[in-house]
Length: 110
Image (cartoon, rainbow, N blue to C red):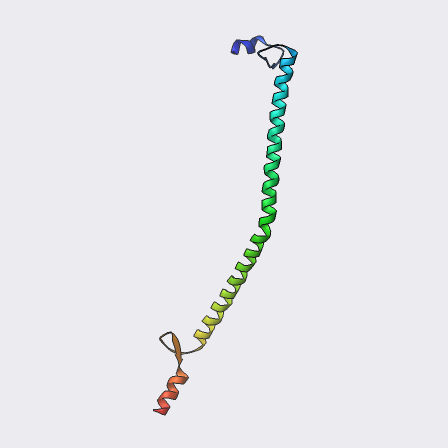
């Protein structure tokens, strides 16, 4: 095969098995038909993915918006709960903060 390339000084040529014009035409037609079919399938897959994306993006945006709201609510809850517990002084008994005012009131009544 390398000798054929060296002997062919006119450039690249496609050599077909049958040298008739009809055979060459059918071979080229089959190549172009296969390329057109692959292009058609590729475009069809592209539009299918594009349609799925167009339908999926609003749903993802809505879920993202809900997630951001939940995160903001959690952040405000944490910030209010930490400022509330740091502002009060006292003991924590069974998950409840007993402030010094309550302790002082109990001591006065006893």
